[in-house]
Image 1 (cartoon, rainbow over the protein chains, first blue to last red):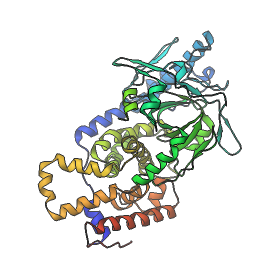
Image 2 (image 1 turned 90 degrees about the vertical axis):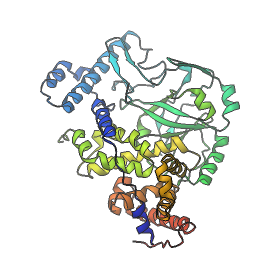
Image 3 (image 1 turned 30 degrees about the horizontal axis):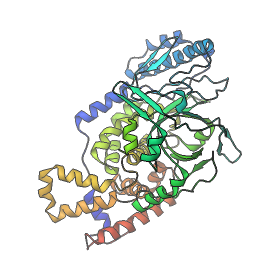
Image 4 (image 1 turned 60 degrees about the horizontal axis):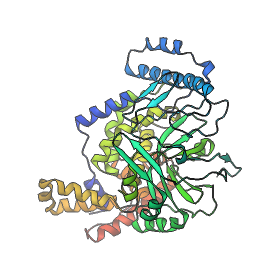
Length: 292
Length: 179
């Protein structure tokens, strides 16, 4: 029997259950786009946008209007808020990178089941992602070089001092000593990456490791046969290294290698908009440390 | 510049959800497909401005998103080891009836092929799934993967060689015929 025949015979032909289809249809209907084109606050007119809602008969226009309203409220609220105290940020402390004056820098993370409440004074989420103190962020203060690579502020650094997470169902202290002892090769979690300039914030999967362990990790991947790509071992701090994949970037910063894997972000965008990492994980640090 | 019409995700869902689910399922497993297929359309909503009907079909655009999400999920779940063969074993072991079926050599052969596909490097697995199981043309697969068509051909050639080698130990009659 030839290979084509075998492949055809082995093709899985099952289909999603009606329950799954219904659940996912509702998931999509509830979803509010996070990538909103937000004009400067002065150009937004929530009243006009709100009036448009009356014309929408189906869920799609209503969703679009709702998204626009959220965006408008975000920008207006942010402008008022930042006017009161420019040191404050929206989602967490020290989270906003250097902002372009012409760009409204509002962020929100909208995962599947998250909600957003907006008023003139505060913008909060009810996230699965706990917020972390200011010491957990990395401000890269990036600039784009002629080679299209990112250069980081040499003063930037990844803080690995104790991170205290305080969420509804867990309290866990992460300290650099246990990190070094327990996770010699890697720390892996979902990080929230703020992309200032495009008003876009999403959850990204970031793999971070010390360069000294990097070769071993790549070697491990090659042995496992699960990776069909070849990485270049980084040797210069603060450089963005890209491989053949459009969804992965390697980033060296102060002794750590970050592998950023986005759902749909292309590197051209990444180079132009990334200004800061924010360490926020949707997993407990206990899981992170134990590699679960 | 003419503004693009708003993305009709509702219609996209009705038209393509099943195939998106199947693509993810064929690349991974039913549970992952259950988790990710809906997310594909959420991402589509987020990235609506990147879709250009002049440049490609909605289906292929959604397939591209599905591939990225599945890659990420695979990395989360099995960064340092071959994940899929174990998942196949898990699926088989969960179903007592399937255990009986597996005694039949035909089904054992099918399982061997699925395991071999699952053990391929992800880039090769993707072209096999897209061309052999989703029945996309090479040009369509190239569009989904955003790579040149030559890359699709070379990946497929390497995948077929690896599959043939892998299956030769389990299905001695396998011939590595190329299309």
